[in-house]
Image 1 (cartoon, rainbow, N blue to C red):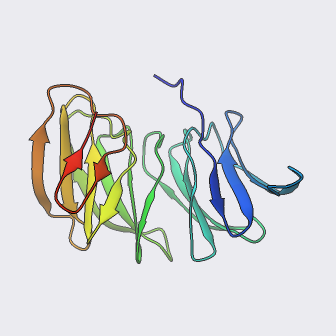
Image 2 (spheres, rainbow, N blue to C red):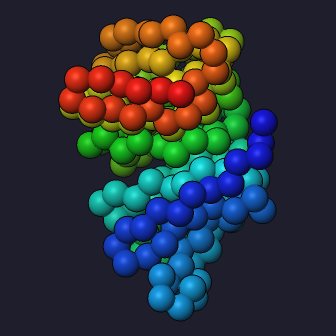
Length: 180
């Protein structure tokens, strides 16, 4: 189940990615030169999210990290109790992410404190959330569903049974949510 490798995020004239040896890298896109490197405690299997001068990334070491995009300095880290293998979604002052403890969490973007947490019965949340118009859409494994949560409150708006693992990132348009 851990066959994934980080995608690359392009932001602010840099490339950002995670590595299987637990690093978050910021690279120059022209030369490939390393601008900075930050070591987490284990593999980083999904792309970092970059927003407003911060890099947000989950690690197999059970933490979500906020780093300064300019130099890789640690701003905060939050222990989610189980591995985080998806890309966090930035939604204003919230960071929405899932973990293998069966939780969807919203963390305060400034402090890393939990704004809300929702348990999805016995189901890894490996899907990278998508946020649109204040709603976070995320898939699950054993719950065989795609969920919609209000980003501000964490209230579950709906769940659709997709009859199988929905590990991929949903695609969201104005009127529909698509999941594989």
